Length: 447
Image (cartoon, rainbow, N blue to C red; front, side, top):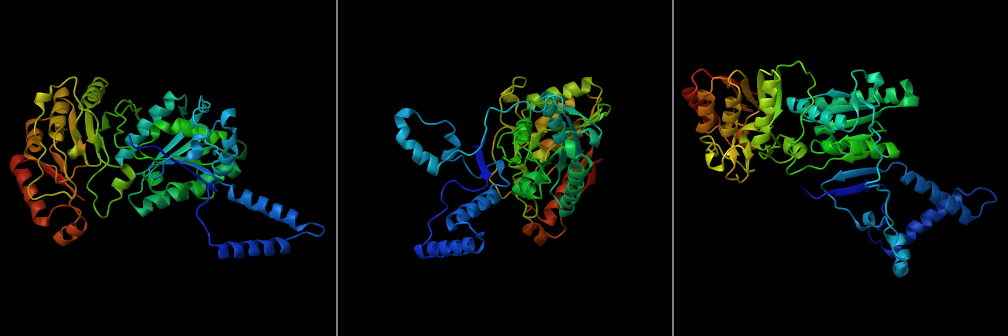
């Protein structure tokens, strides 16, 4: 896991830097002039100065947020929550003046969510739908209950998308509407509002500062912490955020709670994140680097879905066919690990590819063997990760749909180079012809 960072917005306890003597003198003169001009009749200059400092202090501490992220580590004041012993009393005054602990309650958080109701609105891609089902599992386990009625909710979540500006505009508009619900419609029982997903990861503190529209901000890799974030928010009037990106979080041990129990088609997340770093794409910055679920947990979940009557499963990932599981399987022998690590002909990457591990071709084969009557799809792939082994798995398993989404992005080689896609127009067309030669009845879609 990445190192936990903690940052609180507000006035810093420690000095932010030295100022020159002349600059400090001019600031003191300006402050004295300001105090003198605002002094009430009969009030001494010292009294007016203390009053002015009190007002400024209140203004600075008016809105403070507890933000967990990857950028900053915990500073000394975060660990000075307990007073030092009598034997070190001579250090107390120095600690109090330079590193007074901020209000950061760690473990003493009550279970605020027991019996409370939450309402979820989902925007964006299918991965957000899958994340919502993981989120619901986490909240249900913490004692929350889902409601289908907005007016009954104690907490309202917006699962957001940041891939396009229009998607974010919709969320800002929705937040403004929810503010009226908090301040006018239900001022005596105002719900908390939480922003989750990619927009939460991208905008972070801006959401908390936006005219108190948002109470909790949670990124795609921090859903496990959401019950605690809600409890922290309930204990104070400050906004709370956890936007840490993880190097290994896949939620493999969490059984999703389906939004619709009657659906016979299910999307199943097998990997998260992306390493491609295309010049136009925000996904690596909002979803993090690639990491894959272990094959045992995926196969086990597909078996469970088959037993429940699900007839179609779609393997899901930001770059699904770059799947690479390096864990030790308790079911499949390590010497059975097949190939499938080669790039498509004429394709390249801007990052150094890692060797080893079980690749997507083996995963797709194992999933297809579970239930011959269950259709298997996958989305969204990258054209660079279509080795011959994967094409043969699609060809040799009748329940794997002969439908491949092959994103082109542009028909201009020079534009593709600027987009850092790792292939040319000619290489893409050659890949299409090669796939057709292996799977004659294949159907393509693109974007």
